[in-house]
Amino acid sequence: MTITTREVSHVTIVDITGRITLGDETGKLRDTIHQLIEQGKKKIVLNLAHVDYIDSSGVGELVSSYTTVRNAGGELKLLNLTKKVQDVLYVTKLYTVFDIKDDEFTAVKSFDYFFAK
Image (tube, rainbow, N blue to C red; front, side):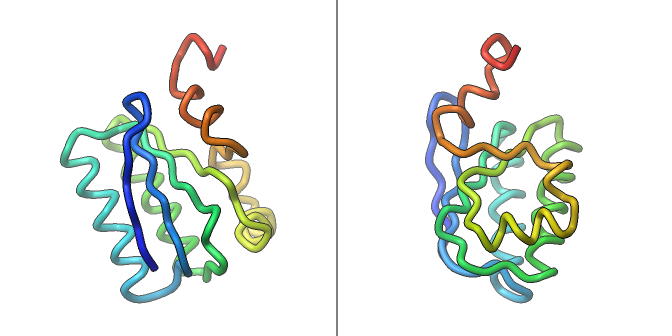
């Protein structure tokens, strides 16, 4: 799994490629989220367009990341879910918890209070 981050209009986009599974992958995601929070980045979008598989530990890490960001006063959103990830979030009913966007422009703009109204 590879993780890269980039900034778009004061929003941090975390591009994830590969599988989010128990082990190094979930640890890497956790570390990335904690580093962003420490840097004061509180508007975070996880781009899951290139995630081809997620297991229960990966789902748990998404929930944990969401909670960590919320507790720090920030917001975490999901972007470009693949069919497999989307299916897992529907089966677990977590699609009701996460703010899920289909395109980057909408995801970035959704942090803008005036645009979101």
